[in-house]
Image 1 (cartoon, rainbow, N blue to C red):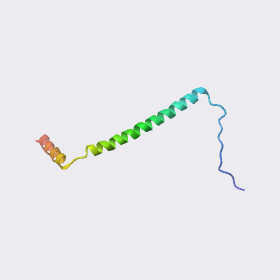
Image 2 (tube, helix red, strand yellow; image 1 turned 90 degrees about the vertical axis):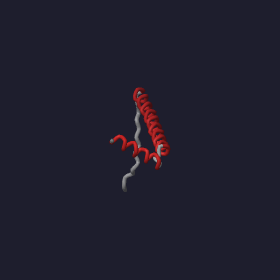
Image 3 (cartoon, rainbow, N blue to C red; image 1 turned 120 degrees about the vertical axis):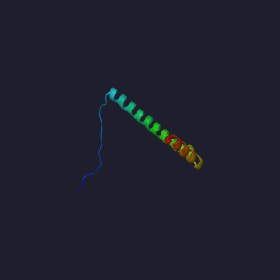
Image 4 (tube, rainbow, N blue to C red; image 1 turned 60 degrees about the vertical axis):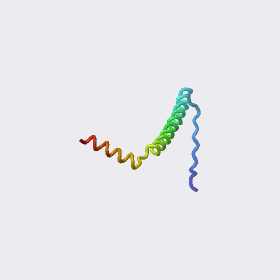
Length: 69
């Protein structure tokens, strides 16, 4: 007969300091993931707000030409 792919992991004892550190690290991960997601939303909204139009493109080219001269 074949073997089963079932594993049972059991930690008998985790010291209080490790429990504290692990829980704080997990909280930090959640916070960082939230910040990353929030920044993605801001970047997306900024792109929509700052989308160049024909008039802004022509103005930018005029400004660039003035810098060259």
